[in-house]
Length: 139
Image 1: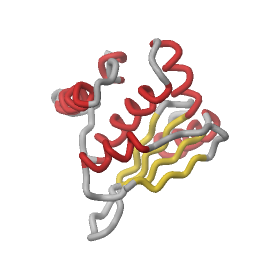
Image 2: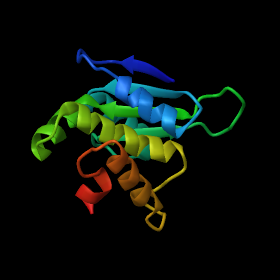
Image 3: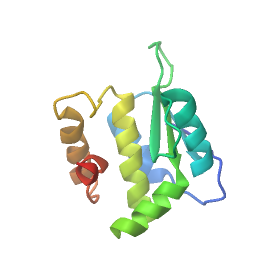
Image 4: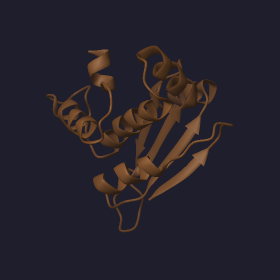
């Protein structure tokens, strides 16, 4: 289940994200939608990078029964901008960012692994018939 916190005025249907989450983990996930200003503040506070980003993931440090997997924070501004830039839908871009963040919660890390994050992201992109992934776009 997704615990959804939309801190913007955008109308967002998360039913497809619920399906992705359910098929990837039995644990609950917190999804927070924010604007660029808020995600920039979070990025600065938690990663010491003073700029907006598309998605941040915050896995819980301790695993306990019935505890959520963690939190995914997505910038609505990036969703809108990248969907337009890459010529696909808002919903597809939201799914791409959600999958990317979810894989980080599940322990994948494209910055240090040997391609496992990319492989799993590509598998999910194909499964859900989505456009190119973040890792492919940023390679």
